[in-house]
Length: 60
Figure 1: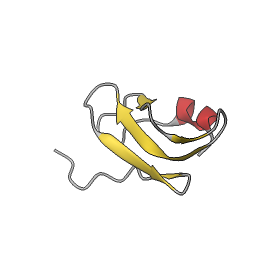
Figure 2: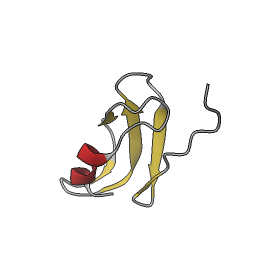
Figure 3: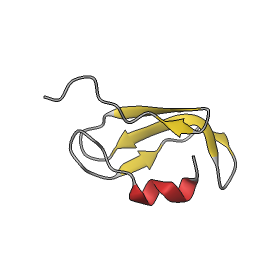
């Protein structure tokens, strides 16, 4: 996932911004593996093989 894409992604649950958590694998431009976390509801989304999984199992 290109890090610049982060400014366009929102949480599918509450529609707030996401943060890239520390400890990701990649470089200054690309994330290969890591986690995104919603700034509001704290939902965590996994990035694997450069693909963010923004699917939520259950909407409350």
